Image (cartoon, rainbow, N blue to C red):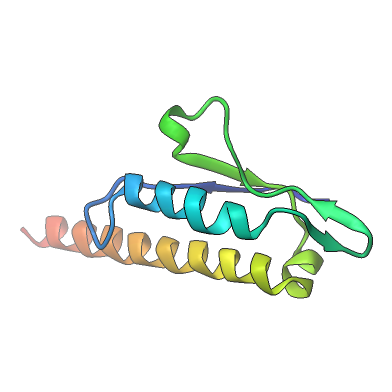
Length: 100
């Protein structure tokens, strides 16, 4: 089974990293408790021990599991959407800096 690592970036865009951390802890981790796929209990996302302030997370799931569980798929879509916001902001800032 693969391992997906999510990192919460600290950018002042729509939400702060601390708000994202709280949403993961309070919304997604509880909804991902005791998810069973094909007889296997899937462990919810866990904070990375070495990353400070619980701002880095890992989640041991395969792509197949992403497709089989609506709750896991919702979490994945949330992370992808937040990553796209950060990426767009980084590109905008890089272009703005290059043009100034």
